[in-house]
Length: 184
Image 1 (cartoon, rainbow, N blue to C red):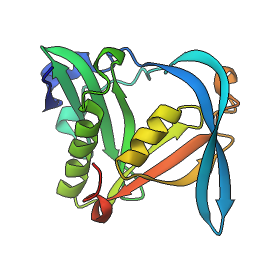
Image 2 (image 1 turned 120 degrees about the vertical axis):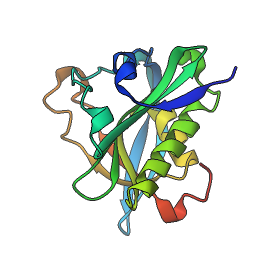
Image 3 (image 1 turned 135 degrees about the vertical axis):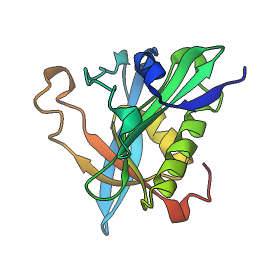
């Protein structure tokens, strides 16, 4: 199947978050910090399915705001994936959201969306992109690592106020433009 990626314009705002973002959770990362470097191993956990909640944010301002953007992937005019970015306070392009519909995974859409995000960062003279995921989203972590991202931080309290997620650890991944000549 072929896909195309389009930068968000006002006619596409209604297409944001129209993907099935459900994921299977059957393992989690166990972090190790040694000499100021993070590494991890994985352990199995009881299988469950997780649907990541979408924010209720209004994206109508994105097409006209040079500090924000989104790219949507389409297969036969159906939304197959999305990446939503903004310039963060630390000068990185922050991936606010990335997802590929379950039906369209393993087609290269996620990697193509990351590449578009990197190009947007480059076009905006930003040093790279960053994103956050969770310790139990092992598939995503492995994907980000295969794209060249490096695990640089974690937060054990980020989800503490959300009862259904309070046991999750937030993981922060970075991809520098000067290292982006690698796997992406």
